[in-house]
Image 1 (tube, helix red, strand yellow):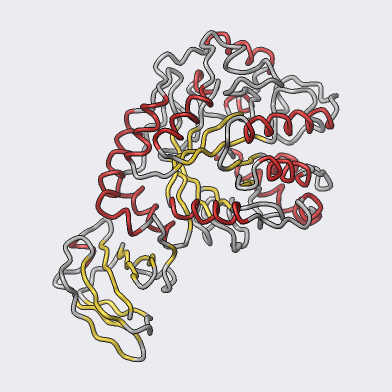
Image 2 (cartoon, rainbow, N blue to C red):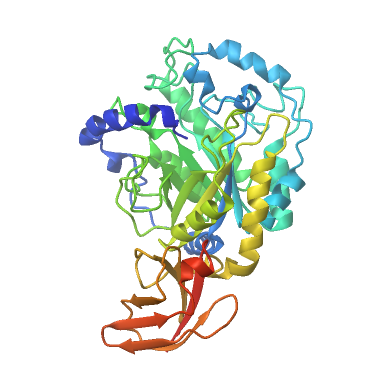
Amino acid sequence: MKSVLTSALRIASVAVGLLSATPQLEAQQGYQPTTDNLQAREQFRDKGFGIFLHWGLYSMFAQGEWYMTNANINHLEYAKSAAGFYPAKFNAAEWVAAIKASGAGYLTITSRHHDSFSLWDTKYSDYNIVKATPFGRDVLAELRDECHKQGLGFHIYYSLLDWHREDYYPLGRTGRGTGRTGQGKWQDYDDFMNNQLTELVRDYDADAIWLDGWWDHDIHPDFDWNFGRMYHNIHQIKPSCLVGNNHHQTPFEGEDFQMFERDVPGANTAGLSGQDISHLPLETCQTMNGMWGYKIIDQNYKSDSTLIRLLVQTAGRNANLLLNIGPEASGVLPSLALDRLSKIGKWMQIYGKTVKDGVRGGIIPPQEWGVTTQRGKTLYLHILDWRSRMLSLPLVERVRSVKVFDSGRPVPFQQTKAGLTLTFDKAPSEANPIDYVVEVTLK
């Protein structure tokens, strides 16, 4: 995941690198998704909402997931912290239960972030939570089992870049102060990544692989990540496994969903999501506060109403929301994060069917007043900002009925060839300042 502090530098360097980049050479050429894969894509879209978990050794420092490179910590010194990593309060069942209660349909966990530390008992590196820490438990396996038990999708984040290993060569534009010589052999690192990904897909039964870090080599515009091999390997092991890559570009061939970082599809306020919107399933990832990994001084959590409106705005653009939490080093989810999960869950108990479980973006594109979602002949108007008692819609499809979603109270309407006009007893944003939902049934 990209650090906010380096976004400006990233944008400047990408502007040069993208001119000569050739992502089509990195793709899985001739990729034809299987029936199982296409079905998995629809199931992914049905879920509508997921929770992102950024957790690893960096949580011990409570300075965010980029602390190692931001502070230029020697990779050998940083690795010593594994000897003190003991998340005694970690309880996979409690994590999954809290996430499920929020209305989320899946979680995405960082199996290995840029610091190279692995959260599972990998055979390809002793620098992992089982072999290098006194905790000695495979948290990825525990989360997998709980997701299966409680009915959540299990998605796995995997970092392509590495601030620790010598065979991550040539060095990218990050992690240059961590003391590596940069004299390793790339083929060894490529083999290492593919071996680990094989474990994650085969042994941990990943429903999706969420890749990150392609942008680290944007200073090497001719560099080939060899995604053809990687994607083919993943799909060969488990054809239904969805592959996504947070490269901030239009998807490469062989990818199954497209993500947008810190912005809804079509927006680019953070400078990371200017790419075209593809036909693939879409996902927006966003933080609850400011950081992805736990940062002790970052208590500036977005309000529950802001997060709910973000979920609605995302759904109205036919995308899932992947909302991040940075667990503490002790193994607990921060209390403010749990509070937001609970409040989102209460809202979802009433309105969840308007943003998930088969709902897609509505036939009316986003408007100044809000967005629409739709299931079959049922159109949901999510009125987020409208202070008038009348609302005109560019809807020419014939309407059977209109009612307030939560109360079932009929809404008077008039329809002409030009569109639909609704009349309310009270301005929607005064009646419900979070999201006034109107259900329109089409003929």
